[in-house]
Amino acid sequence: MVGGSENSAPDALLLMTGGCPHCPAAMQALTVLLKEGAIGRLEIINVAVHIEEAEARGVQSVPWIRIGPFEVEGAATPAKLRELAQGVNDDKVFDAWLLKTLKSGKRQKFEALVKNEPQRIHALARMMKNPEASMAIRLGIGAILEELQGSGLSEPLVPAFGEMLKDTDRLLRADACHFLTLIGGESIRPHMLACVEDADAEIREIAEEWLSENLPA
Image (tube, rainbow, N blue to C red; front, side):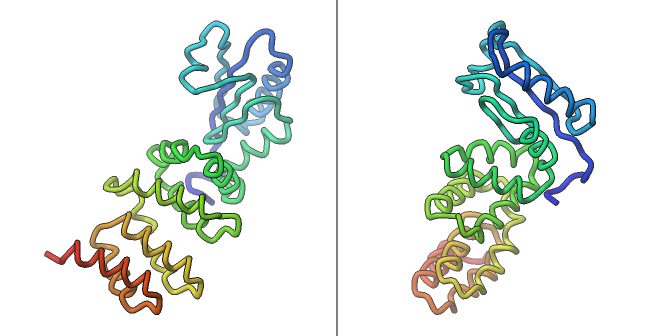
């Protein structure tokens, strides 16, 4: 589980207009989920009246739905909305959302989420071992870690990245070593000392550079 109570229900937001052909079905599906307790609160905003609500979120078309961290633009089946509502605490559903988010270059959505729900940071470690995690995805992870640098939010990843340094995959070890330097702090020092002994020259260089710039007090 991703954290929180297994039975915790997310809140939902629906942006709609009176002339939207798909909005009534979305409203009905969300209302059913509300009655069932699959979502805890439902807010509905008519953006024809409150256009600023759409502009603030960069919404181009309706219905636009947010369930927990998940966003859906356009028509969505009741089954899909139910899956998202139930998937807020499901690692597989969340990781699929994160992969799609990073592929679309919208890493800021994840950064904002982590600031409100710090336990979500562990998804980055799982993403590292995802076979669909391309170089672009790994660059996105690095950008997130740089953005969160100094906040302490990424520090819980240190043990997981440290464990990756033992992997036989050279690229995974190199990325883990680099990502640890982006997290920084004294907690990564033992891992940098281990990287100095790595068989790969690039990994040794990453670690040696960090150690030379962060001499012990």
